[in-house]
Image (tube, rainbow, N blue to C red; front, side, top):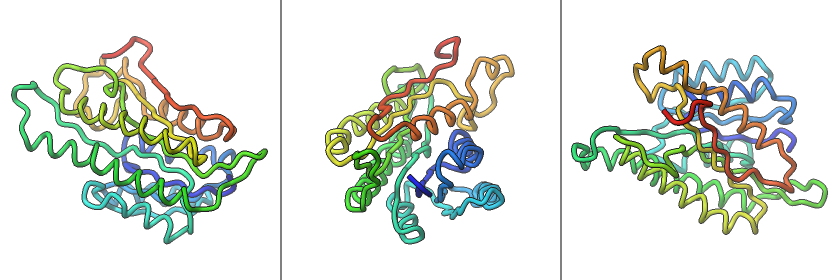
Length: 247
């Protein structure tokens, strides 16, 4: 795709931020993309917007809690750029603790962002990609890419992560259901399942533990690689773990 329009949620910190930085570094491989970045903190987005513009990349930002209006980023991208080619959904939340001590509010908070907002965001993005003109390459019609950043917790349970695991297993179910439609429409659905990555969601982490964790740029690298593969192929599932295994 020449100058693809890429929407990145959760772009302000962690993996989302590293994805933006990696796209900037590899802009020529991606055909000088146009970016729509969203996260809750405007100051984080403003830094990335300046970096993008300095690199010659058109970039719009949308400060937003995705749980409040999940379809708005798709609408904003289309209003600004006229189409939407790729969505990288990095926004997510987690509440952690003993299964018997987690509350109804913990469940509602987690599920509203990780499940409800994810469904509505991807539904809107899919509808836009389905109706827009495909990009043709070697007789292959490619309408876009939908990248979910779920978690290794989408297929393995962890102590003190019951609500988080429930939300990630739900995302995995959505991924599988969407592929039933997407394969017919020339849309690739990519599920990225990272293990332990040192991001702000972990809070304070001992130095020794950090040394065993992956870094956000490790995940960003494989996502960009997956987007660059020829559209006749789809890297459907990417499982990335620390070399020492799950922590």
